[in-house]
Image (cartoon, rainbow, N blue to C red):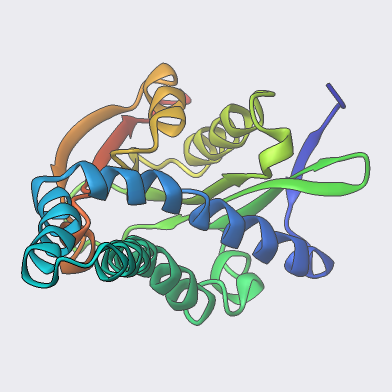
Length: 222
């Protein structure tokens, strides 16, 4: 395993950071696709449509084409929330990473670097709430596929937790896809607990992928 270190984001990191972020999000599409196929509505659509067509036409060719067409449609449906999220993020908070995350001491953006290459990323910014505890939101944790399983995600998360303590936050919050089991294991191992489960929007409800919402209590530095 090649050594790595974590440092703050620099402007020259942008291209690789965007690549890791985009690939990390789209990495979940196949799992969501197969998850959708296992749902009753997906199963019925995939088998019922071609089956009904075969009964009406007695054509194996038309039924096969319908089956392939429905698979393509379901793949697009499963992929859409992820591609939308990538596009939305790149046009909002990650449009200008320095302005969003490095212009205020209460937020930050880190990268993991190994042998001169960016291999992971994470960022955090305050939750804007009028009342209540001072909360920091962990966002966009992602590690390049070839570097997973080396403890980088854990180290990046610990960096956020250390930052939260230094900045005197009360809690760190985040959300994770219910199908993202590796991330859930990292968070729960570090002391996060699940507060609730919910669909972020209709797009996610359609593909039956809710989010788990986690919280971590920051220990006092005193």
